[in-house]
Length: 326
Image (cartoon, rainbow, N blue to C red; front, side):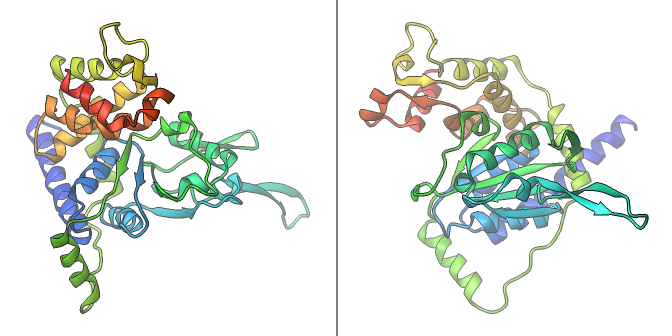
């Protein structure tokens, strides 16, 4: 393919995706930032956890994105009695016409392109760990046999930030598998008014499919190959390393941090910056993209010390202070 044809294909992909983005925004009024961050995580090829109170549109967001992007989606409701086999699938013993018995693997809901794990912290640690291999390796292993997941594969999980009774906090290893933690807040009065009018009068419009899984993978490949300036890379690395307990002695944040983000955080910050730059019509990421994504990319990858929490310190504020110090 010639350079001219490749550039035209990329432009067409970008235009189609922006049309799909507008469709999502149409069905989730007042949540443009949440939509952009969620689409950024998908464009970057990863997963995201959506944190918000009930009724703020988390499920609607995932359903709308999966439909608009043309992705095969599944939804699992996480509960304490949910077992790994309920997500991954299991082998059953069957008997053929000749009377011979053999095991057949029955695929679970994880075999899709977009998996919604609703209230993921209500699943037991054993069940949560069942998603680790799927999220990282894009495959699952059952009875010693590996089974590849469809491509692309993304997990969008949800959490309620308040109701913690009967929940199991996600282990650090699994939290690190999520590219971003996206906090969903209340819409403002104007947007909520428009939302109520749109959903309580007449017949609500149906979500349309405007993209495809193959187009998404092509776009993800283009974004991975987006150029990256040395200044952007160094900014990302300086930010991540400044939020570690072994940061330099002159770092005032050092005493506040119990454990900090690892190298995967640096990789994620760079990759999501590329995707976010694309969403904003830029051909390469800028420093402002790193600054914008710092909190959602890093907050679930670090923990404050007990004394810092006792003093009322918040992870978001610590990260923002680190951004200001760059």
